[in-house]
Length: 449
Image (spheres, rainbow, N blue to C red):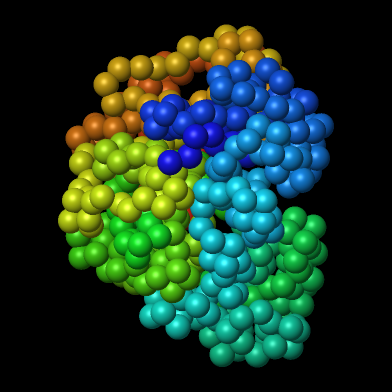
């Protein structure tokens, strides 16, 4: 087992990893930017080291600085969390070269799943259902138009190296394809340094359902059920729940089996999430595979009782998962609301600044993952998430009630937050019924402004 792990991240996920390491008896090293000197993760780790200026590219995305920190602190492994370098093939390869264990899959697996066009071909060959579209990247607008005529509009133009909703354009008229390709390529190059794009059939208002998997280096793959991530704004998740209101035991088994195939197709080990588009007829299609821990992993931990971050570390250390698929069961219902520093009354404009006061809800079935504290200044350079508020209850109905009063008790002074948005969303008839899809927020003006 590792004696010391460096955490190449910040915020709540860095704090979450530190806590898992403590339970395993592993010392931790926190890295921080100049803007994060007072950040909680830098205060509670066993050691902390500054790796550069505030800008991500000069600190949390600076591979040389992070690996130098590993060398100076004699860290044996790096946990990348999510975002930043967590799915960066070059970082994983450089960790290997420096004799540092990357807590995640092999670089080859990251590369295979990180290129969305390549991932789709891999999944298709493995027998995983995929959305009709191009076989790999398209090289011209003429080729895209030909594919669109074959599968029919609307289609989606998607960045091969995309993520976070970037590099995606929906095309309803073939006459708009050329413009969509140009803008998608420009955005993809700007955000990912890769302007490759591919074409998929646009599935009208599906649900976004993902399967959580964990695989060890001994060939064992386990899934921990699904999460419904259909509540999204601009392709960014806001609310997640498990089980999905649309799930049946038979559908869960089929999606779980597809996830096994996906993991084995890329010789996967570590935590991963296989994401699907789910139609209202029970049909589902592979969308992408995230080769890291997810923001919303906590609700899966609540309903299964398994610590996914601990398993990541154990698997990276070469240990075998000591349980089987039959040992995994889902108990009750869990919901997560992402609490962000943003103003929902002004088009969700970011609201960095000093947290003047903070009161968090508590009680049975309440979990809060956060790095915020009273007096902490939220910097403007990074993601605006303040906390993940999670509830767990015997049924969805009770979980919704619990989340409503937990949100009402969550008090944050000094900055704007999206708590009011969540309260109004949870009272929406469509969401309360459970019969919603990814188009929910585009159809409704939840804030009424």
